Image 1: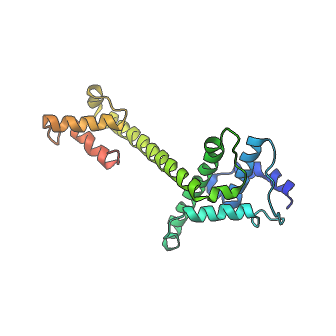
Image 2: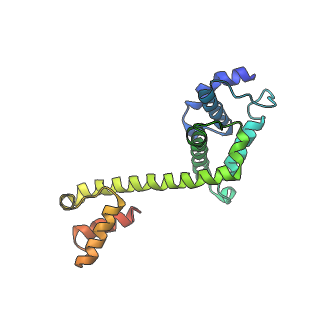
Length: 199
């Protein structure tokens, strides 16, 4: 495969479901983002006719291994499959973060795949990604709690605003302050919030 053929295949590869992606697809996505941002193709070094044998694909393979848990080989095949899928999504987001956030303007830019392996970049991304995942999980938890309240405690929504964790914590404080029993709708809401991991 020539680099020209590789670039002709990129759009087809990166539009497939991410569950089928691997280090080569991630490299292709990197090349897509680079071309989109700079208007020129990224020149792959030491091209050997196989996208899996170049430096860039090896860099993404190393990155995936860095993001996998240390006990990966001891996991069941289903757990390994889920972990690989999570890591592909994480690296996908890392690529987007590099192009769309970290180097979105100014004279600095993403110059190669080795940049993704720098510990300082990985650590900065990990902090932001963890915060993003926590917020996403919280948003889903609040949404599920509101859905539950609409079905099982509709009158509670007329008495209390529930839009964020702070609202749920306010209800929790309200229960303590007024010594409400466990059979109140407020107490049942707090119990459900704990079950859903909202608080």
